[in-house]
Length: 376
Image (cartoon, rainbow, N blue to C red; front, side, top):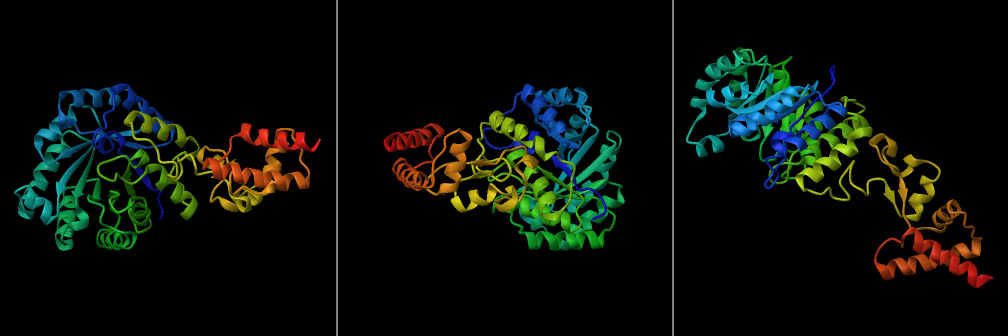
């Protein structure tokens, strides 16, 4: 890969399509500001065809002076393109369904798609600097037709082709096969992957797409989106950097505030074990782990916690070892000898088991002080 992977954030469009999610204008502006702070270079700002209020909100975002490129999503209709132009956004993605199953549900066919390509692109070219074409449900499309569709779009001079795994049926191997093939058939084209997470593979598929020749990927913060959601911006950026040694320009050290704000604004809490931003990502209890972490933070973590804007945290519970407990108490200026440490460890395990949770700092100190008091 010779160029930096390009991440397009779709939280304000595809993320808000999650059932029950509604962002206010102020929340959208705050999300946009945090996206910019985190280094996102392009944001899909909405679907203008939703109505005059959506056009007004997008125009507010466009006029706010953010440095990132602003992209509107549109169906292959002149009305959608015209409404998108009213926002002042500089980019548009025109979406065509390309699978037989979706076209049949819409009462259309592949002939209709091919006849619409030239007029829609020509209409958009008069209004936008940058035109992306979306192949919706590309993962279920006939591959010969998909090639025909891509060739026709490129003949009209489009700037980017989005291949969408609309219902999330791809896996990393089939994603690699798809992008290896299209990139070989159409070299030097900016192909974008848009993945959904129905089978839990959207992030992995996004990485696979990048490594197989895709230049761009669209995703959302926290994976927010319809059904099981989308690929996660924060997970893609971290996986590229840590697993593949590729820096895509996202400032991971600033990602926590953005993810927390989106969770709050969407009323969709972050799962404690969610990669990168879950509260348990850098939290440890196991005695074996904690003992090693005291010497080297990377012993049981794939990254330094500071890389993702967190701190490594060791908690005290049923799986804690004596050395970790002793280390914790020493930081509180409480000294315990070796015999006390063994007794205290047993008490910690018993109390944690009875309460079915980790112990608080106060509970541990209370146990230690009681032990010391009885020994005097």
